[in-house]
Image 1: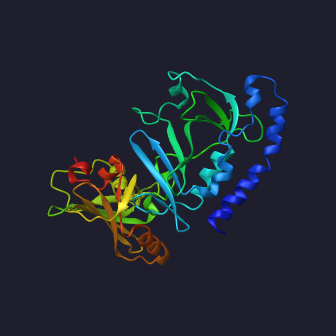
Image 2: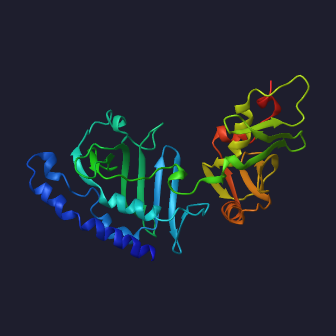
Image 3: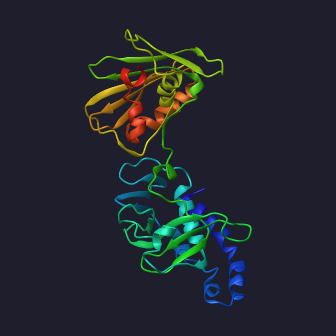
Length: 334
């Protein structure tokens, strides 16, 4: 099924619910009720197949999702977007219905997170739907989710505002769009079963290697680890510290991605799985991380998937996760 037909079918499903919404509106009497059930972005239904990009801005960060040659990718890097995320965002935005008029006061906007998205530490997000020429066909400021605040079978809503309108709204429906890449892509670098982690090493280029290996299991059935070549007079801080030092490398997510641009490698960390799969994290001087498979594991499907997802890319990690790749003897012992 083509992307165009996927959107068309989804929009057709939306239209089938329109009659009930308009009936609800017809039975209303007040100001709010007069608009209840109206589409917030009525023109978006007819423009859906013209949309080739979705931009989401929050503060100084903008994430752009693009449709190119039948595929969906992150703008700039070309990293693949999860299937259906692009179409779902369009359909969800086109489906939003006004439910209740909210504040028009700018000083109250932050309470429902519909403030100017590019100012300070705003929590709101500006979502723009653009065509191939770069023209913005529709845009909306997304605020707080309002789960369970709407009556009926579908009880979830969201606070929103149109950028050129002071009126904010509680709408029926939700749009999942953010500058967090985890909304759009599979943001895992490694996603291993930590019960099968066997060994990890941490090494500054030209420096001493720190090795932590699995030696068995605890009475509670969890992995037990020890430090190789423990310096005289030092001891591990505790079992948990060693376990997390190794197992955390099995589940690493990124916050940004780019095509592999090379750079000076200043640190490395490796992770060995019980089936022989050996992977290496390479850390550049400016803290971009790449992953290479040094030895295939017995599980060929896992190895193939890991290579396919990570070859040719460099990643930015959250500070706490990057720190896990740079552990030293001092971090683990006392």
